[in-house]
Length: 115
Length: 114
Image (cartoon, rainbow over all chains, first blue to last red; front, side, top):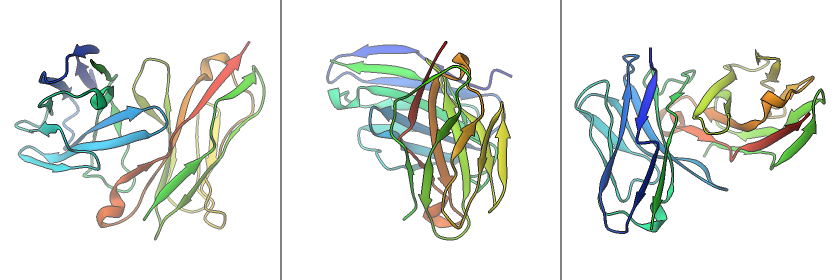
């Protein structure tokens, strides 16, 4: 199993550009999520999904869209990039539906810089 | 709401030193508690977890005990190695509704010198 994969590893955008961060998992996990990691702020949840066709907002959803057309894929779209979106983005999945004991499996991250 | 507080870093130790990273929490009900580790340039991975009071999670020489009376889940290792250099995150997940969100500490950076 490859686990959770993310592409690209690094990306530089100009303000106003759009792009999609890709995330895929091959563990047949129902629950997938996107986090951003910023110095001094820890991990913050952007969006999550409890299965194909179902998505919901996390704590910092503004400026991001997601969709979940298959169990495996959960892309994150930046609609119009802003410097405040400079961050490291992690995709994660878990077998359960955010169950109390569930382990999260993380991808290696995408480091995004917006100029 | 639920929250997690962990000690600020960075923590710098010599090889074979004893490690403690403090983590305390506030939560209603009976949450599960986790420690995740992030090695340089990688994503987070589960280090250990405990799902009820007095449980001890352990892995790779690390231990943490879920202490409800002190609302703590401190991470310990008796003898650290250079390869333990990483960022360690304490996390909590509660039992119902919005409390099922995974709540993260801010992370503690550990550097181990040879």
